[in-house]
Length: 433
Ligand SMILES: NC(=O)c1ccc[n+]([C@@H]2O[C@H](COP(=O)([O-])OP(=O)(O)OC[C@H]3O[C@@H](n4cnc5c(N)ncnc54)[C@H](O)[C@@H]3O)[C@@H](O)[C@H]2O)c1
Image (cartoon, rainbow, N blue to C red; front, top):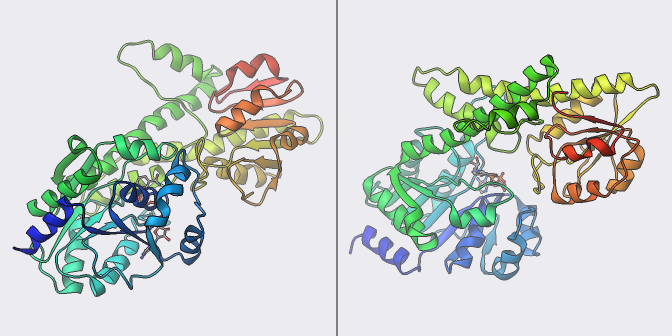
């Protein structure tokens, strides 16, 4: 039997030894899912305190349903902060950071470091899957790096594929099971192995074979598409501000057209992925002489939104006779998650404090205050604030607001989440008017 046959057999029999590298927002649910589906799973993360916490059962992410899976399956995962014991791994799954630097250039050194570390210890006959979102061509480069560092021959001693993660934060547990998956190998044999492996865990009809480059580009394209669509809604909101008309009314009526579906504008676009993935796509093509206008423009529009809202809040503050305090509700980058990476609220907070506005913040899912005064409860924030800004619609915040007395407050609702508050507050302020 060849190494390929051996690996295929152990994957098909669900006997493959799997190492998930990077146990963060994506790696942790992935490891838990694999463990739940009966795979032997190891979880490697260089963050010692994360591993220590997980070993004590501390789940650092707030995701609907994740704690329940963790209660049953976390103990099955062998957790470590080094690569010492990954030598027998059959399948490596890389869920590592792939950020951009300050000039917007993709950073792939986290993946390169991991590949070097894996190459030092791995056996012949392994499959390496990259789940991270990467510039087009990266998986091929990483496969070449692995061949160089290990001395192994591609398609004889190892196989390599890009299998991007596409879950929506807040719905990770649900979407892990229901989303379509891409298996983009650096060779036909790699694609085949990746398809067979993913089909052991997820529904076979949801696994789509392709090439590594197409898989990389498809993942970037879907995020850039959504970012661009949101930017259209946000630009419309800014135009409606100038025109002094209600953007939500404009969108509601425009969407009555059978072929129009404008998204909801808001405070901006945050999170780990959208603010970087459009740039990564553009940069992939730019390196080969290409250029783009729409995707960068969309990025700039979305980045400008916290400043647009800050300007509107500042105008309200200046209109107040006494010194007003602004209460920001929700610091996470979106509803019902604790992730604050690139959060538009944090950007709004910085924009307001840089102009000397008094700000207090509250988020039931976030411990950090980002330098602002933190309220211990929503009641405390409402008591202190003259102007209440509904930044993030966590279910708990919406529920509590609906029963709160805001009759004396100016209520700012950039995402148009509670238009019914209009009749219950001193003044209701939307994104455009
Ligand atoms: N978060 C999302 O919503 C999401 C969704 C789809 C895809 N992605 C993509 O998935 C990838 C991972 O994103 P994430 O949000 O899980 O990132 P994350 O920062 O939450 O997790 C990455 C983990 O990797 C660890 N790490 C860094 N270098 C390491 C190394 N050399 N060896 C072992 N561990 C190492 C870090 O300590 C961290 O815990 C990114 O490419 C991202 O674009 C993220």
